Length: 284
Image 1 (tube, helix red, strand yellow):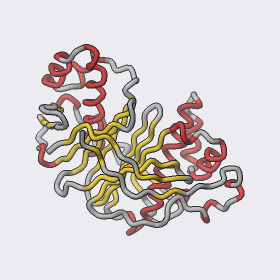
Image 2 (tube, one colour):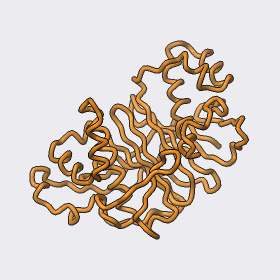
Image 3 (cartoon, helix red, strand yellow):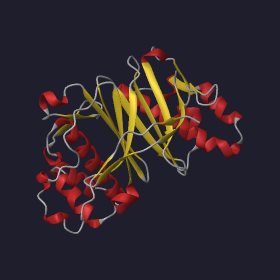
């Protein structure tokens, strides 16, 4: 099985009990670091590692008034925590690359709801980012010079296999039905993460019909995209990894330059460590 090679990580051990006494803008999450060309950076945060109350207080300091209001709209504390960690991860990751304190970053959304940086000036030119979260994982992908989409799903999530007939291309649904029942749920989610990554890279939201494109897995480690919407497989590059036994990550990017992918496990405001992800399959 192939693996994604880790990059050198950096770690910032901080005394969490003392952190509230620190000035936020004097304790950067990462040293300033321009995003290398030809590289996709994946920052992966397990939600279990961000439940410290001192961390939560620091994350709250990063949010805009609109983000505070959005967080409070969630009924369950689990969802409020997931949203808070997601916004903290996005802000600290982007801050590292554009040289603006994370709490000062400002965002807007395009017509399809895709978030965009609005106050990073030339430092943000060409930077594309995308974020996804599951029950217990948040993933932020960043690159320069190309469309980018990421999705993560927990394999323990209950997948409605009947919905494959609605959302999947005919050949995908047939391939799914041909598998042993014990494999159908995981295969559904493997296909779903790839579909979501492509939709997010295209930037059109759910206005892009999911049954107009799909994926087949002809050999071990290989995935083959196909399109009935006028797109072409050669335009896109796809990867799919397993973060751990329960969590999948899929990435789609514009395929001209075949970028290198580097992954870190990140606790925002605390640690970033290079990791190895198990590569399940990729497009050629």
